[in-house]
Amino acid sequence: MISSEDVRELIEHKAQAGSGVLSVYLNVDQSQAVNLNRGFEAALKNMLRNLEDTLASQEQKKAFSSATDLVLKAVAKYSPHGRSLMLFCTPSGVIRQQELKIEIENSVRWSAKPYIRPLLEAFDEFQRYGLVLTDKAHSRLFTVFLDQVEEHVDALASQDVKHIKGPGTDHMLSQMHVQRKADGHVRHHLKNVADLLGKVAEDNQFNRLILAGPVAATNELQGLLPTHLRKLVIGTIPLSMDAGSSQIIEATRRLQSGAERAEEEGLVQDLITAAAKNNQAVTGLDSTLRTIQEGRVWHIVYADGYTPQGGECVNCGFLIAGKTVPCPYCEGEVQVVKDVVARAVSRVVNAGGKAEQVRDKAAERLHSAGGVGAFLRF
Ligand SMILES: [Zn+2]
Image 1: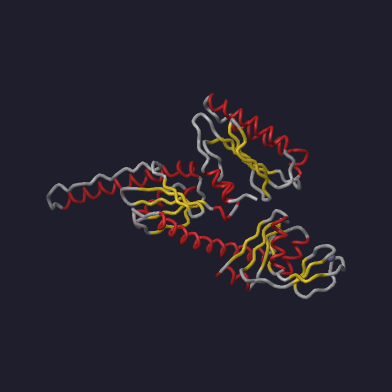
Image 2: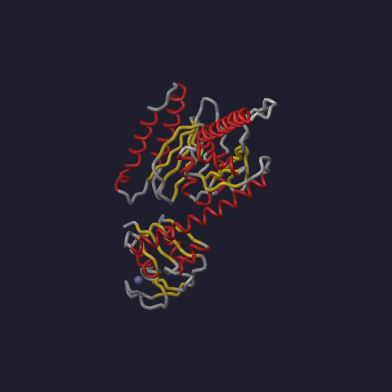
């Protein structure tokens, strides 16, 4: 499996002038017909050709072509066991090659640093946060990954709002004029931040964004963000412009747990609704265990604290809720399993599926629907 250290290493990879990193995410799942007979290699070659067409400079093309050769060689030697292959390669060598048990959508990218956003999105524990601290005149940008804060000093060109002096009279109209002019500067500053943020998000690759600072500024900035960035915003929080690392981490944590709770509640709601409509989802222990046995579960969701006893057939592996009886599938012997949900979860994860434990309100809601449920592949 991939560790947080691995991800950090990729984040900290130093970009080199005139070079680049080829990042490859390749679905190699052998249960999918398109990937049989090394079909994933054909898919990769196709993507690389399309990517090459987008490169402008000869220097870039040359570096890209060296990296491409290395990637194709590595993939030619590779025999698939997992669901996805992830590979990062510079013109002088492969930085990292790793097989993943989870499915990641095919993509290739040529950039100054490893492209890790698909990785961050695939693993909940590797969220990387961007935090913009802004008032009406200045902005600072931070990224937070696993409780480490990095400030990107040059990222946002700080355009100071000029101190606007009144004309020295109390004349109402001229004061309004001055105020309007100042508002214009503020808007210009925030607009500038919103524009630059797109570029910064691309370079620094965070998948969640926090807007911090005085409420008036964060509200206005949120309104100015392009849609793809606004989607990353998990919240706004008041924070002093000279906030230090510990305050940044605390703000991130606070919004993170709020965002996670909200996501969990949404997930449970979706699960219950889909199950009620018989739309590729089930709730309750019996149905969940049955569909796992049938190989249909791709995402199991379970409530914190729900640990019922059950059984496992020593012959066919069927997991059974409640009292042990002869296996209903094969009449084999059934052994007691202390926490049958935990066993079910590891079964799903080992088969390449996802598992999510929900807490608090989401857990209460799921408890009332049986404590566990699953989204199905078919
Ligand atoms: Zn059995």
